[in-house]
Image 1 (cartoon, rainbow, N blue to C red):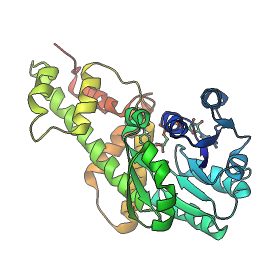
Image 2: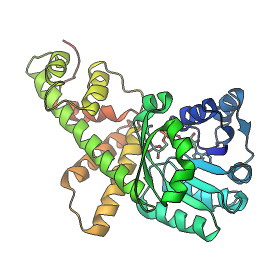
Image 3: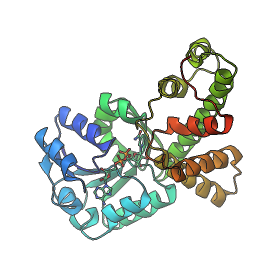
Image 4: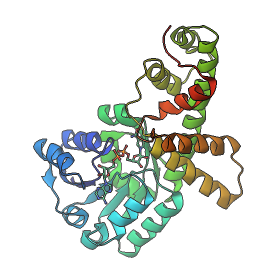
Length: 294
Ligand code: NAD
């Protein structure tokens, strides 16, 4: 299939590589030339702009930081809508507000384009090994056409109409953030009690407190490795989008709100580009303890 890809960051780059490996013809674009150069060296064609990428593709995927970037790349000057052929499909795989996803989807539909919102979970490791969880919103017929691409990136679930993919992703992000915060408090208490946090982690990981989040993030904290992964500033953005969606629906999310404030404070302390496992450093600062092997 002829596939376009815009946004070659931590996630987009390995995802684009997996589409190449699956045998698709790829045209790519990013503001960062070095990222484009890497994919061109791997066999992709260089797109001059998002419009150019779309003009040369049956399906164009975007993997961008947030809603404003997606609106600029799809709807803005030199954007996907300017180049896309009627009948082609736009798939936004960024994590954005469901309301923005619906707005972009409606603009695509008005131009005769199919649209799916299809955010992912699993982070860089699963983007590399092609095992992302893909949460999709849109029409079944459009989903069926894009399925071969999703199969090259991970496993996908159609969760509802356009916007549903991002509602599902927000639910995912709430669970991950609150889980990391709870893990951080637990390991801070254990460490300040004189226990080795690695021993505590190994003792509990097979029980009810065990989780994919614990297995991925506790070793990072204990090993003092906060290289992203998933940046604090992106998780703050996701929880802000969750709180905006919740306010519109009059849903009270007290723990999400607290986690979002913690992430904002970490951004103000210059930690916005650390991995979200660095939520632990906020708890450590308050407890005056460092969670590391004893
Ligand atoms: P990133 O910041 O590493 O990459 C974003 C890329 O978009 C950058 O290369 C940037 O240059 C490019 N970009 C921005 N504006 C552009 C424009 N106008 N035109 C062309 N390119 C543009 O971010 P990421 O970590 O790859 O995350 C991408 C999305 O995936 C985000 O919505 C994030 O929340 C979500 N996500 C990330 C992870 C993770 O672990 N990193 C996991 C799941 C979901």
